[in-house]
Image 1 (cartoon, rainbow, N blue to C red):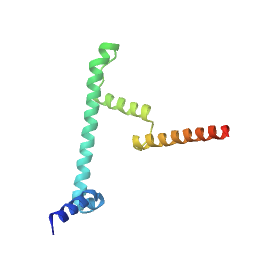
Image 2: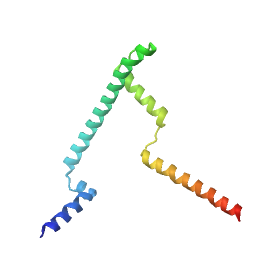
Image 3: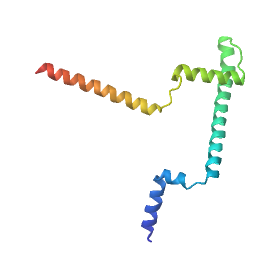
Image 4: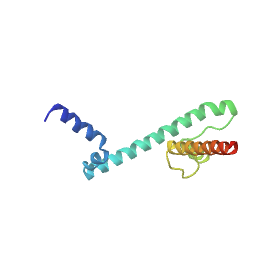
Length: 120
């Protein structure tokens, strides 16, 4: 087998994600899930801690508000995500952005078509 064939095989394996996942044992999959769960909780705790620090640094001085505890800062994060994202809106932002652009293009196309019809 030549080096070119080896490179093609490696390139094919890089893009074959379902195959990559299927090669893992059940124990590896479980450990990866636990690891990603711990990583996610750590990131959430870090974001909550940053919100708490920023609030306690700025808000009491600027507006005279009380300092927040860690759990209150977490509640504030949840509240802002509900208010600004809406409850249960899962999809990716890019998907909704692309959907909005397609709808706008269709409106523009319909408007141009109507203008052309009125000219005739």
